[in-house]
Image (cartoon, rainbow, N blue to C red):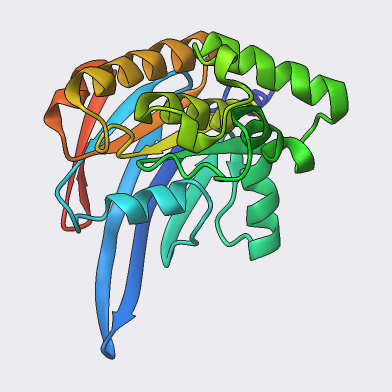
Length: 235
C-alpha cells in the first residue's frame, strides 16, 4: 500500500514563503498599492539583499514578512507557520519567538546598558535570570562588544550600537532576521564591518536574513539580490 509522504516539519520548511502578497492602503480616499502580488521564498541560512529606491515598498515588504502588518491579499508563512490573518496579539507572540529586527538607527533604549538592551527583549522570552544574562553576555562577546556590556548607548560608537542591536535581534534565536538599512548611518568601512559581521553571525546560526538597502554595494555580502520597484519584486 502506498503511503502518503509526511509534510515537511517546521525545521525543514523555508524561513519565509510569500505567495501573491498584496498590500493596499487608502490615501485621500483612493487605493494606493504598496506591494503588488509579491512572491518570494527565502531558505534557511540564506541572506537576501532587498534593493530598491525610497518609496519602492521595501518597508512594507519587511513589515509583512516580520508580522508587523497583515497583507490585503496573499499568504505569509514563516518557518512553517502560516501567519496570514493573525490578530495583533498572535502576531506579537509570533514576533517574540520567531523574528528579529535591526533598524538603521539601532533603536537601542537610551537609558539601558548594552547588556540590558538584550535582556529587556528576553523578559517575555524563553529565558530568565542567570540563563538570560549568560545568553546576553555570550552574544555580546561573539559580536566583539563584550567589554562594552555596561556602557550606555551614548557611550558607544555607531558600529558598536549596531553590534548590540544585532545581538538584541538574535537574543531569542529567531528563524528570520530583518535588517532595515543597517549601514546607512555608518561610514563605508564601518558599514562593511557590520555586513561582514551579519554574514558570519547569520551563517553560523543557520538563520535567514533579509537586508533592506538602497546601496548596491551591500549586495556582495548576500547570497541573492532581489530588486523591488513600485511594489513589484524582481526575484
